[in-house]
Image (cartoon, rainbow, N blue to C red):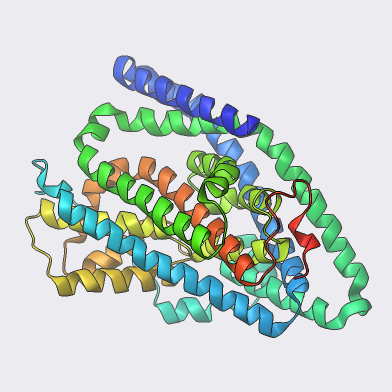
Length: 417
């Protein structure tokens, strides 16, 4: 919590400094951002991303070994995927409903003439699914292809579980590697407040107060939907299925949310979110490593909320009325796209372009929301990783292996997985 407090202080300081430079010394912001803010943020992000591939590979292997039984692995995988798809659909519905009621696109006079946006083409869903199997696992690790890394690591873990004592030393080496990675995470997190300061100062300073104020209604809809989804859906599933107090859940996972907000990257936050889930939420390492690694790749509830709000906002800004059939298409397309574009850089905007195209809305409308997307991306990333952790709690409870929250210092792995 001390680290979380320091990061929050750094975020507040970054907002103040960024806005002050943007309002009173815009000519100074450029050089300061180039030589101070951006380097601070980039160094911290690179340190975190440096650990992502080792964390995912080692934790997935050990998690698969811990689960052992192929039937149990399939059952846990099915529950995880089902939770992610269901909550994504609910997230879009919440965003659509809120946007239709509050009408953010009708709140201002938006200049839609002459705007342009070049949309990237997303790969077909079938190509993405087939691409999960790596032809070269080393290349997959070098390129950071998470779905391929997860598949290969699960296969290696399954092999170690089946061979048992024959490869006991391999398992021991991986367990020692996991201990080393956890130490490196703790060490890197000492730089988090400095990175958070640089990232938020750069984001706020480049956007400015005028841009934020002009898009205030749209931002309000997105933030409101994110809050409702986090409290009602994640908190509700943690309470009803996970049998845990939602306040306890959010309080113990808060440090990871702060890191996610500052980095705006689910992958970069993965080491911290897994650490919080295992140590504070008492999720067994075997389930945490599987569900949260997969969630960092395909769970995009926060992005889905942005899409739902943005679709209605763009339609209203262009004076286009959406039918009930089009709204249903938005839900279906966004849910499928959350998996189909999982490994594509800039997936959020690519998914939005796909959804807009599916209902006949101008893709150029994305230019209207680009100005504040960087700031909203920070919030929705925090929501995304919260969904991953909630899924881990729910799946663990359904398997009967969730640790006792009152047993401080007793790892969840003391339970039989």
